[in-house]
Image (cartoon, rainbow, N blue to C red; front, top):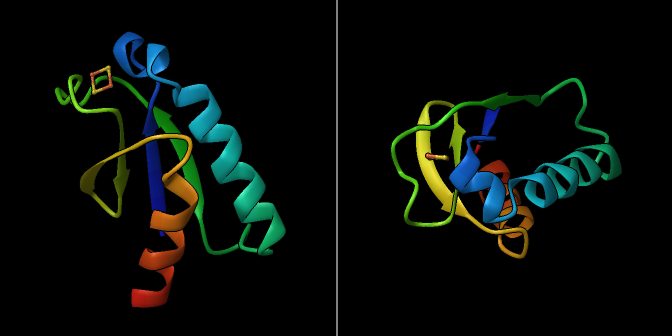
Length: 78
Ligand code: FES
């Protein structure tokens, strides 16, 4: 699974740093380092709706509180 989290200025203000930290902690806790590729990326043009992230190319809006649950859901669907 490839995860990209926007570190553009608007997403940064909305907490992308905390989102990255939560994702990193989740990946480590679950021992998923081999299965998940985590990268930062620049503005995806969805600045108004929360922190933007891409999971396998699909753009989603998350917050530091919702990202772990969303990720768990996506992993269950795999
Ligand atoms: S700054 Fe993140 S989508 Fe624009």
